[in-house]
Length: 182
Image 1 (spheres, one colour):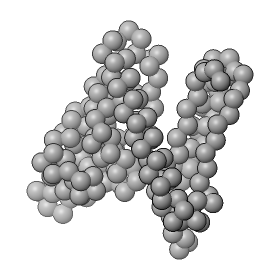
Image 2 (tube, rainbow, N blue to C red):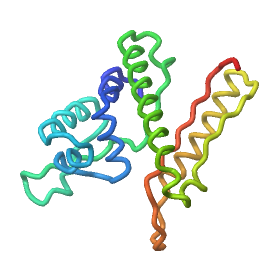
Image 3 (tube, one colour):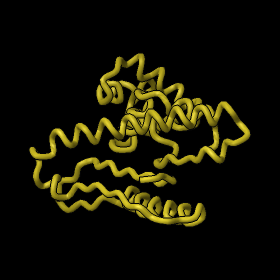
Protein backbone atom coordinates (compact mmCIF):
# COMPACT_ATOMS: atom_id res chain seq x y z
CA UNK A 1 0.00 0.00 0.00
CA UNK A 2 1.50 3.32 -1.03
CA UNK A 3 -1.37 5.76 -0.81
CA UNK A 4 -2.12 8.30 1.94
CA UNK A 5 -5.82 8.16 1.06
CA UNK A 6 -5.95 4.40 1.70
CA UNK A 7 -4.08 4.76 5.00
CA UNK A 8 -6.34 7.58 6.13
CA UNK A 9 -9.38 5.49 5.28
CA UNK A 10 -8.03 2.58 7.32
CA UNK A 11 -7.28 4.79 10.33
CA UNK A 12 -11.00 4.93 11.12
CA UNK A 13 -12.06 2.18 13.57
CA UNK A 14 -15.41 1.49 11.85
CA UNK A 15 -13.82 1.22 8.42
CA UNK A 16 -11.14 -1.04 9.82
CA UNK A 17 -13.80 -3.27 11.42
CA UNK A 18 -15.69 -3.37 8.12
CA UNK A 19 -12.55 -4.48 6.30
CA UNK A 20 -12.01 -7.15 8.97
CA UNK A 21 -15.60 -8.35 8.52
CA UNK A 22 -15.12 -8.55 4.75
CA UNK A 23 -11.92 -10.54 5.27
CA UNK A 24 -13.53 -12.96 7.74
CA UNK A 25 -17.04 -13.26 6.28
CA UNK A 26 -16.47 -12.49 2.61
CA UNK A 27 -18.48 -10.08 0.46
CA UNK A 28 -21.40 -8.28 2.10
CA UNK A 29 -23.96 -5.53 1.69
CA UNK A 30 -23.93 -2.27 3.63
CA UNK A 31 -26.78 -3.56 5.80
CA UNK A 32 -24.89 -6.79 6.53
CA UNK A 33 -21.78 -4.85 7.49
CA UNK A 34 -23.83 -2.44 9.59
CA UNK A 35 -25.30 -5.34 11.52
CA UNK A 36 -21.89 -7.05 11.91
CA UNK A 37 -20.17 -3.87 13.18
CA UNK A 38 -23.01 -2.25 15.15
CA UNK A 39 -23.45 0.78 12.89
CA UNK A 40 -26.41 2.41 11.22
CA UNK A 41 -26.83 1.37 7.58
CA UNK A 42 -26.30 4.96 6.41
CA UNK A 43 -23.02 5.13 8.31
CA UNK A 44 -21.89 1.81 6.85
CA UNK A 45 -22.75 3.06 3.34
CA UNK A 46 -20.71 6.22 3.92
CA UNK A 47 -17.71 4.23 5.18
CA UNK A 48 -17.96 1.86 2.19
CA UNK A 49 -17.87 4.85 -0.14
CA UNK A 50 -14.70 6.14 1.57
CA UNK A 51 -13.10 2.69 1.38
CA UNK A 52 -14.06 2.40 -2.27
CA UNK A 53 -12.61 5.83 -3.12
CA UNK A 54 -9.40 4.74 -1.39
CA UNK A 55 -9.23 1.59 -3.54
CA UNK A 56 -9.65 -0.80 -0.61
CA UNK A 57 -13.09 -2.25 -1.44
CA UNK A 58 -15.00 -2.67 -4.67
CA UNK A 59 -18.52 -3.52 -5.68
CA UNK A 60 -19.36 -7.15 -6.42
CA UNK A 61 -22.36 -6.67 -8.76
CA UNK A 62 -22.51 -10.36 -9.69
CA UNK A 63 -23.72 -11.12 -6.14
CA UNK A 64 -26.71 -8.74 -6.27
CA UNK A 65 -30.16 -10.28 -6.53
CA UNK A 66 -31.57 -7.10 -8.10
CA UNK A 67 -30.47 -3.62 -9.21
CA UNK A 68 -31.04 -2.08 -5.77
CA UNK A 69 -28.78 -4.49 -3.89
CA UNK A 70 -25.09 -3.55 -3.69
CA UNK A 71 -22.49 -6.06 -2.55
CA UNK A 72 -18.92 -5.17 -1.58
CA UNK A 73 -15.66 -7.11 -1.33
CA UNK A 74 -12.06 -6.38 -0.46
CA UNK A 75 -9.80 -5.47 -3.36
CA UNK A 76 -6.89 -7.26 -1.68
CA UNK A 77 -7.30 -9.65 1.28
CA UNK A 78 -4.01 -8.57 2.88
CA UNK A 79 -2.96 -5.13 4.00
CA UNK A 80 0.66 -4.21 4.55
CA UNK A 81 2.63 -0.98 4.54
CA UNK A 82 5.89 0.49 5.69
CA UNK A 83 6.30 4.13 6.67
CA UNK A 84 9.60 4.11 4.77
CA UNK A 85 7.58 3.86 1.54
CA UNK A 86 6.14 7.32 2.30
CA UNK A 87 9.27 9.21 3.31
CA UNK A 88 8.57 11.98 0.77
CA UNK A 89 4.86 12.34 1.61
CA UNK A 90 4.19 13.92 5.01
CA UNK A 91 0.44 13.30 4.77
CA UNK A 92 1.03 9.60 4.05
CA UNK A 93 3.48 9.25 6.96
CA UNK A 94 0.97 10.93 9.28
CA UNK A 95 -1.80 8.66 7.99
CA UNK A 96 0.44 5.59 8.43
CA UNK A 97 1.11 6.51 12.08
CA UNK A 98 -2.61 7.05 12.70
CA UNK A 99 -3.55 3.74 11.06
CA UNK A 100 -0.85 1.90 13.00
CA UNK A 101 -1.90 3.46 16.31
CA UNK A 102 -5.53 2.55 15.73
CA UNK A 103 -4.66 -1.03 14.71
CA UNK A 104 -2.40 -1.44 17.74
CA UNK A 105 -5.17 -0.19 20.04
CA UNK A 106 -7.63 -2.63 18.47
CA UNK A 107 -5.12 -5.49 18.85
CA UNK A 108 -4.62 -4.60 22.52
CA UNK A 109 -8.39 -4.50 23.11
CA UNK A 110 -8.85 -7.87 21.40
CA UNK A 111 -6.13 -9.44 23.57
CA UNK A 112 -7.81 -8.05 26.69
CA UNK A 113 -11.17 -9.41 25.55
CA UNK A 114 -9.61 -12.82 24.81
CA UNK A 115 -7.88 -12.95 28.20
CA UNK A 116 -11.20 -12.20 29.93
CA UNK A 117 -12.97 -15.12 28.22
CA UNK A 118 -10.18 -17.67 27.60
CA UNK A 119 -11.05 -19.83 30.61
CA UNK A 120 -14.55 -20.33 29.20
CA UNK A 121 -13.24 -22.09 26.09
CA UNK A 122 -10.44 -24.43 27.23
CA UNK A 123 -9.95 -26.04 23.81
CA UNK A 124 -9.12 -22.62 22.33
CA UNK A 125 -7.14 -21.60 25.42
CA UNK A 126 -4.85 -24.62 24.89
CA UNK A 127 -4.38 -23.67 21.21
CA UNK A 128 -3.90 -19.90 21.63
CA UNK A 129 -0.40 -18.54 21.99
CA UNK A 130 1.62 -15.48 22.80
CA UNK A 131 5.28 -15.14 22.04
CA UNK A 132 8.01 -12.63 22.66
CA UNK A 133 11.49 -13.21 21.30
CA UNK A 134 14.63 -11.13 21.61
CA UNK A 135 17.04 -11.41 18.69
CA UNK A 136 20.11 -9.58 17.48
CA UNK A 137 19.42 -8.65 13.87
CA UNK A 138 20.50 -6.22 11.20
CA UNK A 139 17.80 -4.25 9.32
CA UNK A 140 18.19 -6.67 6.38
CA UNK A 141 17.77 -9.67 8.69
CA UNK A 142 14.67 -8.14 10.29
CA UNK A 143 13.20 -7.65 6.80
CA UNK A 144 13.91 -11.32 6.08
CA UNK A 145 12.20 -12.44 9.32
CA UNK A 146 9.26 -10.20 8.41
CA UNK A 147 8.95 -11.64 4.90
CA UNK A 148 9.08 -15.23 6.20
CA UNK A 149 6.45 -14.61 8.91
CA UNK A 150 4.15 -12.78 6.52
CA UNK A 151 4.50 -15.56 3.94
CA UNK A 152 3.42 -18.17 6.51
CA UNK A 153 0.47 -16.06 7.68
CA UNK A 154 -0.63 -15.26 4.13
CA UNK A 155 -0.41 -18.93 3.11
CA UNK A 156 -2.66 -19.96 6.01
CA UNK A 157 -4.99 -17.01 5.44
CA UNK A 158 -5.46 -17.77 1.74
CA UNK A 159 -5.76 -21.54 1.99
CA UNK A 160 -8.94 -23.26 0.91
CA UNK A 161 -10.77 -24.11 4.14
CA UNK A 162 -11.41 -27.86 4.12
CA UNK A 163 -15.00 -29.08 4.10
CA UNK A 164 -14.31 -31.72 6.73
CA UNK A 165 -16.97 -30.96 9.33
CA UNK A 166 -14.44 -29.40 11.75
CA UNK A 167 -15.70 -26.18 13.36
CA UNK A 168 -13.44 -23.21 12.63
CA UNK A 169 -13.54 -19.73 14.16
CA UNK A 170 -11.96 -16.49 12.95
CA UNK A 171 -8.49 -16.24 14.51
CA UNK A 172 -6.39 -13.08 14.75
CA UNK A 173 -2.62 -13.50 14.59
CA UNK A 174 -0.48 -10.40 14.77
CA UNK A 175 3.24 -9.86 15.17
CA UNK A 176 5.57 -6.89 15.31
CA UNK A 177 9.30 -6.66 15.03
CA UNK A 178 11.26 -3.51 15.81
CA UNK A 179 14.43 -2.40 17.60
CA UNK A 180 13.97 -2.06 21.37
CA UNK A 181 15.84 -2.32 24.63
CA UNK A 182 14.92 -4.59 27.55
